Length: 268
Ligand code: NAP
Ligand code: COA
Image 1: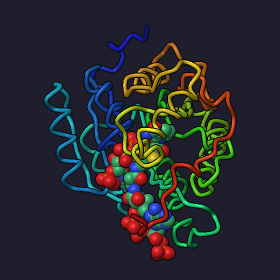
Image 2 (image 1 turned 45 degrees about the vertical axis):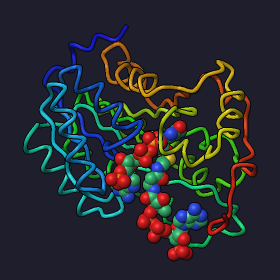
Image 3 (image 1 turned 180 degrees about the vertical axis):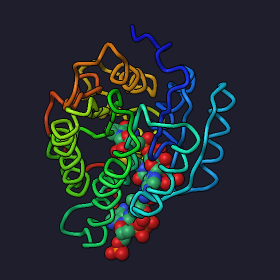
Image 4 (image 1 turned 30 degrees about the vertical axis):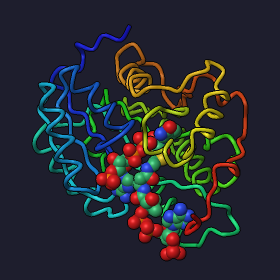
């Protein structure tokens, strides 16, 4: 069991932390006594998320910034650093996704997902680098099964998450000598999340998603948060460059076919 006492007073910065899986991670660190900053586009969402973190007893900051805007990301990281000091845990999880066949996906549609997920993650990681605690920082990218499993109608997300997986490994090598560990979590289907609402938009699609998981259940926000706590704890001090599936074994089944979940935009 992870010793959460090691997070008291630590600085945790969560990019894309205002909802879903990433907010679940932010809340877990808040409960463990960390000072937590969440950053995402919507000013309302970040303020609401920060209030929720304070209600858990944490010092918390909500900052509105788009990961595609490197200057805004830089300013957000510096604001958080000025308040809470060197960053002990950096989570990069901002993402956008939708189901679309490659032949109907516009160049801007493809570029938008690459810009948010992959280029946005690079901005977050690269600009946080000077502000990370060295040695000791834990960097966690939020990937997805699409990073390794070819998934029909997900060419944009597959390309983006595969890039994130490789960036995880490269930065683990580059930053290891500073005592900075860089890992990724690849969640499986997680209940009550925007990602699942988009990828499994009907009861049938949801049932199929559950059936495809060897453990025969959806994951929870806690399942992912526990892995983030572990990866950032001293118990994981020799773990770096790992892309860890937390998916009930679903990635063992390989690539997926999203065709049945697809409704062309504008269709009733
Ligand atoms: P979510 O609630 O929509 O989380 C996405 C977060 O990113 C939100 O806080 C969103 O807030 C923020 N965001 C989106 N675009 C952004 C941008 N351009 N700049 C800054 N922040 C941005 O969805 P989720 O399902 O929990 O997904 C969270 C992460 O888990 C993603 O990386 C996703 O790929 C991954 N994942 C999810 C599942 C799943 O089952 N849900 C499975 C595998 C992987 P704003 O709208 O305010 O910007
Ligand atoms: N199918 C195909 N293309 C789509 C699409 C869909 N369902 N949704 C958006 N696009 C295309 C748009 O048509 C546009 O391309 P175009 O200019 O050629 O028409 C491009 O993507 C950008 O769309 P836009 O709405 O301007 O982007 P945005 O920056 O406002 O929003 C998204 C980004 C599209 C990813 C939006 O869905 C989002 O904000 N998602 C965040 C939440 C989320 O996805 N959570 C789950 C995480 S796994």
